[in-house]
Length: 246
Length: 322
Image (cartoon, each protein chain N blue to C red):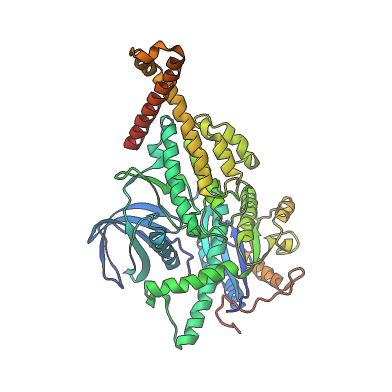
């Protein structure tokens, strides 16, 4: 089995979008390009764990073939790492299901596999998950209410890099934030695998009032077309839309 | 397919779970744990009480069940809870995966420990190192080693590892960890699985038991300094420092250093407590006592003898209480 690159967007936000396009629709479009959209909703300390305002978080991720979690700022580090890892697994599982479909000529629902078969499939998924190359675009909501959570966000991204570095596969990440005064999204960091860069870009973060999540996602996804420095992108094998594998 | 939702599953007490594939029945008694990857229930199966882990995310169950099965095979040493069954279960039109394992009735190590047990701690840590050693020999590390994952079995009084979700093949990235116990978080190394990763976490576990140890997360580069502030575990400082600096590449190296500490501790406690005993035994008049040179030698021998005896009885009582 040849390996490709998994492409993900990781959106970190604290509430619902209030301007522009419907982020769920945009997310669905992005998933069709083989890029999964993962969302982490950050709660206020006094919010309950199931706030209605954050249901959009789950909807965006679901539409984007991604994973979502709603957590308090203090749990961000572990969550960012876990969501990224699970999204990799999920994408590969989708790919494996498609392969199974090709072999059996019919859709094989995971529910229909016995625990023993599942275990064998899982082993393949885990091996691929460890070795596949990864490209993560991190999109941070920097609307006013996120301001006091920024140190936790920075912390969690530093931590993510520690986890990415430990994998066998290569990785690149880039960081964008929204909203900004003139553009919808602003690049803070172009594709890199240097964790030390994160500390440099964070002081630049300025916060704004509105939350155009949909438009920001739409802008951000274009950045996957930018070449990773010194390396041609070769992300056509594993595809979270489970469509084009050849 | 999607795991957007939290993977925990809420089951009412008394719920009957019938496995889709193996047709075994389990009755829920109560919830005993909940994590980021699923929920654990105490259940009654045909063979008695078991622990059942259930998740909305079937890959979690598949992975952990596979690990538990592996643990069974490791060197004939029982490392993890015994795996009994892996199956699926339909509830309200949704399929959940679960596995059933041996229920370890234990006391959380944090509830068991008290600074007065500092010397017994060495025994517990050595038991853990023994288990980790065998796990490492098999090519795996425990990964998510933390106080919550350590139980003292009420029956055997042995320390047991629970929650094998973090077990990772050596050389791979650690799948599941808790920041505070993670050497990457403390900037003491990579988040890649090697035996030293577990030993680092073990050192943090020991420190966490010390009520005088200050949990300051801000000065991450100064972990070694923080260790110096732990007052009730002073005897362990050299071992803890070596463990967090990655000086131990294998569990057995750490065990050897602990042996040395234990020996020193026993010598100290032994000497203090044997003084009256020594006097008593020497006061017995024997012919040898007429020769002063030999007398002092004998004193030594008796001293050491009684010292050893006290050490032995202390050891026996440790094990007994433990």
